[in-house]
Image (tube, rainbow, N blue to C red; front, side, top):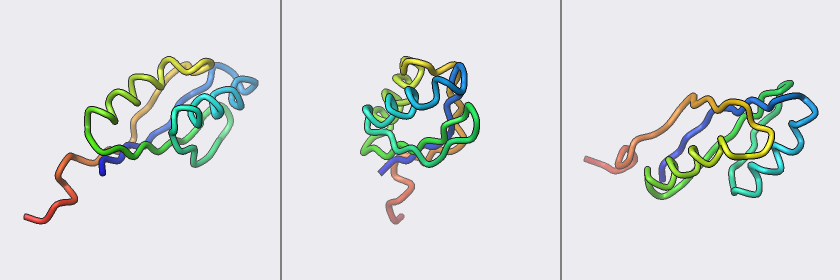
Amino acid sequence: MIVASGYVEANTEADVEKVVNGLKAKNVEVNGVNGEKVVFLIERETMGDVKADMDALHKVDGVRSVYLSYYSLEGADEEA
């Protein structure tokens, strides 16, 4: 499982609810809201799936910017 987390910044605080709903509609977990910032977690099977979902975050209505804070690497959870 590949994991990525970070936050999206809404255009305005009035857009936050719309952004949260947009993320949830894309099966992105919302972990918190702080002002215009919405913290998210994406868990997918492949790095390609994570990349596609990260790219799609820019298209959520009301999102100004996307910031990635953490991601895991493919195969990092496998034993040597």
